Image (cartoon, rainbow, N blue to C red; front, side, top):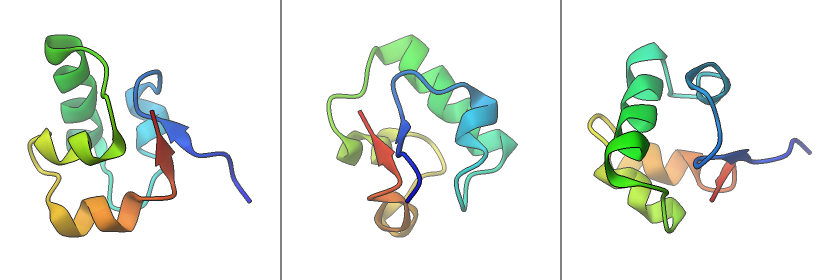
Length: 65
């Protein structure tokens, strides 16, 4: 089993290794983190532009904070 990607430390390139996350969504995650600080929970990923409930559900278990 692969190690979950840490939303608070991953680079855009590392985020792009996740399914359903392309360059634009990866950059949005990094931008959100830079502007608002560290994610407090995986659920906060839904606050990122382009990440909706379905994508969040697909990423649970693949990401951590």
